[in-house]
Image (cartoon, rainbow, N blue to C red):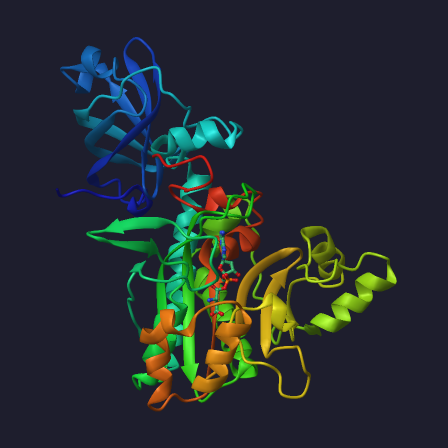
Length: 428
Ligand code: AMO
């Protein structure tokens, strides 16, 4: 269909155009009426005059959110409160919306998140919501562009798998013909196998599934994981790659859409790199000095992470995690027994990335499986890749929704997810 976009209207020329979009609002008077028309690029005021339209009475009965096309001319030098003004010569109704609407499109976003998600198709017609996903698209574009410039190859690994990646409990089982299978928690094992295949640098953007029961503002049961793995590298190389990926992503967004984000009330700044690094032990001592250390064997709670995070303005790394808090594939720190060459990237209490140098020696890997109570023979497909020439390697996994949530200051990760899957939600 030949059409013009609202943002492309040049009111200086008063040219003849055809617009297509949704009726956001309609104000009816006797011989002249006004439609606020919305397309993906903005809003325009459509002026309907009885003298110009033989079907005037029919058109003004149109319900809000119906889909129409309008052919007419832009009024020279006229920009109303609702965008450029078009005098309509022809209006076609492509599809009529039922009324009442289950969710208002022009009211401010104040319905509760469940009501919004139930009618997500309407919720996303609000600009302040749809822009979140344009942001995601843009930041991902920037991260991809950066990784490709660093010679990473984008790969796609299976999501239906035979064994756990990140530990036993949080798996969704699926029937795979006569076998039991699982939805993958992370591409971890496959991205490492590809290092042995000689790719040297790979990245993947794909879904990851976690059957975690907690229903919090920062957990999803299906999220988008941006994963990298790089050969002949350690945790320090991986951290540098992460800082630069995030900075490049934000730069792309600012180039693309800084003004649009500002107009919707989102402030975004290029994060200063390198991000500060604090050792896990230093965090522990800090908490201990306030009488708030974690119980032996426990991870930091959100409250404890907030205490640590309050010392930093933006992103910071927590490095050198104890072995008991990291998965089997994490490389022990040769100079600090019981600790690992690992890191998390945090913003305040929210973890956005985990990463590490990996164990690349098959014997050590088998031992790490056993230490964690896992059977190495269940992971033969993975271990085999370590037996015939596996370089030292490192990598990380970055949650796209969490990154979006913290950069845009959203209160709930569901706002950064088109159709969230959580403890209770499986539809839409
Ligand atoms: P981890 O399990 O820490 O590490 O996950 C990496 C990142 O993925 C995101 N994430 C989540 N986002 C939303 N909801 C969840 N339930 C959820 N779980 C995780 C977070 C987190 O930091 N294989 C390792 C990565 C690696 O070492 O390369 C892994 O999956 O942003």
